[in-house]
Length: 246
Image (cartoon, rainbow, N blue to C red; front, side, top):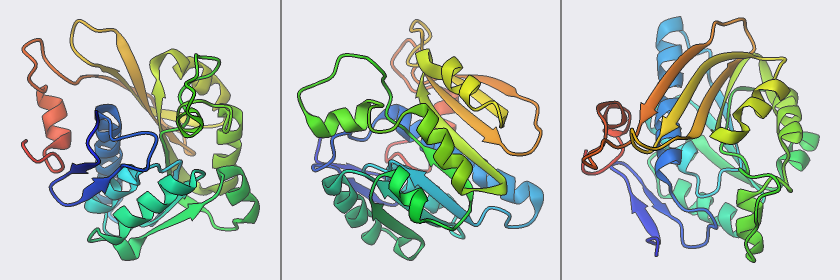
């Protein structure tokens, strides 16, 4: 049974009221996004990324990981589930970056109808599955399945809220990667990371970075754990600033 909380080095995630708990792949995604934003700002030598939108924040994990490494960011998180939104707000309030973080309890579709702001970076760990077997728990179905947010709707919401020079990053199940890339044809795929649990497992997640500006695609593979159950060097490099025992 999952713990009601997950302790990181600089913040804690309370998760007892969230359908989707902290997962290893979400942590990897959050760490990679945080580093990507940090490196982009450093490379450009100016704060061209000042605002971020987190679509479907859940516990608020991704926003907090991003805030830890990018303290200049104003991050707005959207969460449709009321209990999860309250939980994310609680996690934000008890963090060191609470002044940079806010939660909107609404659907992203409704948010974009009322929103006039543009965001420099957008992140999402969207509903994963389409036409897969559902559970009998309504909140978990919303979190896991795309009935409440299709890929087409997600891309429309990104188009509506992204700035002219903006970027976005998505965590997806591997088997839906091609579908999403084809639907996001108006954007440039800047980086495509394929994720395996171990060297002997097939790919199970894709991490995609998109750009509104022309960019060549960089391809990468990440293996989370080695055959002896130790974390891989690249996983440790990304998560060492977050996980307690790395």
